[in-house]
Amino acid sequence: MKINNQINEVEKYIKNKYGSSSDIITRRIKINDNEILYIYLESVSSDDKISGFLMKDLSKYVNNQKEIKTPLINLLKNSILNSHLSIIDTYEQVFYNLSSGYTIIFINGEKNAIAIETKSILDRSISEPSMESTIRGPRDCFTENNATNIGLIRKRIKDPNLWFKETKIGKRTKTKINIVYIKNIANIKKVKFIENKLKKINIDGIIDSGYIREFLTQNSLSAFPEFRSTERPDVATAELLEGKILIMVENTPQVLITPGLFIDFFHTSEDYYQKPINITFTRILRIIGFFITLCTPGLYVALTTFNQTIIPYELLISLSIQRNGVPFPTSLSIFIMMIVFEILREADIRLPNAMGASISIVGALVLGDAAVSAGIVSPIVIIIVAITSIGSLIFNDIDFVNAIRLWRLIFLIFSTVLGIPGFVIAGIIFTINLCSMESNGIPYLTPISPFYPKAQTDVITRFSKKKMKYRPVYLTKNKKRIED
Image (tube, rainbow, N blue to C red; front, side, top):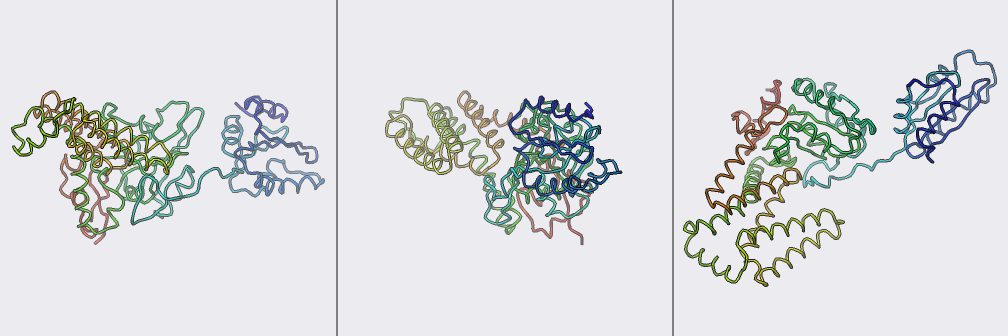
């Protein structure tokens, strides 16, 4: 809808649209025979900026009563000292700019208006990452400010081929979404695919990057995430240099990385800041931890319930003595203790930091000891659940951890019903599920399946950077990473 050329009608229409909200500030100024109206939202605008340069520039013409021959809108456009100034002509642009912290200047008789940036700082400053802590490496993290996030990437990659393609999604929030990639490295077809998917999103508002992840996910029935998220600019930068694509969402400190392959969740930023031989050992530990947390409860139930002959005789006797007097089946005991631990961990996440750690430690010690003393569960069950839970703490991506939780339960159910054959069946279903997934058109288990020999320099083992000369061929055609 076009702007009315009468400022009385403009003021009335805008105030009605905002329900005469208390933060709408309007003021009229007369310059010779011209009447000017400027409007801003006090809640998102800076009074200092408005008083500092807007009023200072306008006052030159208020005090100067000489006849102005140039159209006033052109005069103001060329004299107001603001680097973010634009001419707008629709009410949709007016409402968007007002909510973004701009001040809008209307001139009686003009169908166009001037929008100048006077936004207030409503974002937190750059701080250390809270979810992805590090011993060695940069300690800055993304914030809720879109311009700040772009700057954190720009200062690391000083290349004009680093492109940010912006779109707005949400009929009411009009949230800025940036697709970030390096033009001569990333696969442009993948970029176009993401662009087309984003254009099809029709929703009232985007509050967090999780909204975008849901709309772009191709395998909605799979628990494992197809996108990796990070709050660390150094991680995002490294992925861009590999040929991956970022999706940055305004008002959220989590940046999405695509494709997010299975093996990526076993890598951390510190892997590239330490000696390769040490990192190889650490990655092997992470893989062992993954299988422990996924399989241990189900395997224990299968062995002790159906396949006792596999267990050494001395160990079997010890387990039988521990189970003496326990009223519940092994599978039910493990299930109960797993639920209790998950409740404790959820409480640890939700409570303030000062209280959370103490509650989780006291809860685990007291409840575990009390359950054994009361004869509700056997000591070995506490050990199994503890080992399982500790193994899941290796991973910091909450979607990946939740997927492990679900599949751990599936392994436990199959093992409870069928024993070792059920455990094997669950393993086959798990493998099929992973093999059938794709992330942005790339098989989820790449580069293990399909197998890429040259990419194995940075999968489980990590070679020295001198030997990692090529980028993954499944990500980009610009393979050369290090020139000879």
